[in-house]
Amino acid sequence: MFSGAVEAAPEDAVAGDELEPYRELFAAFARGRRAPETITVVGNAPLPQDPDRARLIDDSDLVLRMTTFALDEFGGPPCYGRRTNVVVVHRGVLASPHTFADYKSRLYLLAEPGRMHWEPEWLPPWWPEDLGFLPIPNRPVVRPLGLLLGLDPERAVWATTGTLAVYLCVRLFPAAKIRIAGFSIVDNPEQTRFEHAWGGDVEVTVDHKLRAESALLRSWHDEGRIEILR
Image (cartoon, rainbow, N blue to C red; front, side, top):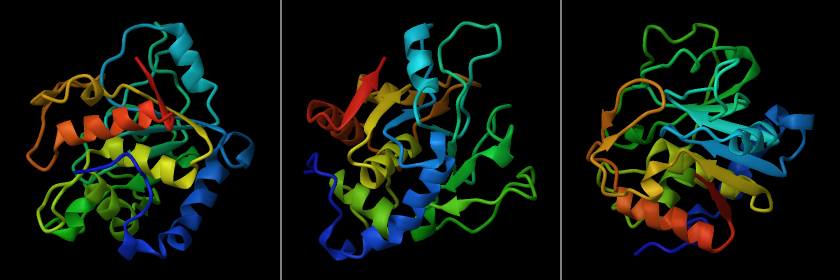
């Protein structure tokens, strides 16, 4: 059984030191280049028009988005906001027009939990040649999150990119106000396909356990660790 706590697993005693460079980098890309006080993680699920939500997202000190994300178009309805400081991707990403737009002004994190099992070290041929990225470390981040979710570390199962991004923010900045938006798994953990705000829907792969992720996110909301924007 998982719990709502976000402390690292016992074997992860040095994780704090290992994650300090990530904390500094996040701050460097945040508004004012300081430790962010407000963070919003925007998932890929479609969102209805809401100018207040879009304003909250864009007014955040730090905004994380992932994979095939959507942005509000200029002159279009306010739904997702436009501010993007950190992008979390994986090697199999189907890039939207926004994924690598203005990439030189953003921090790119590469989620690679499959490297613990079978995933080869390769990048798609359309990846920008001069784009640097920082892998999200598996031992101090992906593995402890999996243990919180009750996942067997010997099996090729891991959290979705969105939940991984939220967990990383909670670990790095526990005192910040952290909001999440566009996370359909909170209310619909039984879905078998992910509907995306940009592009077609995709199948929920067998390496994800959405009910455990949904329960963990809701527990963090109940404890006041995160706020859920709908």
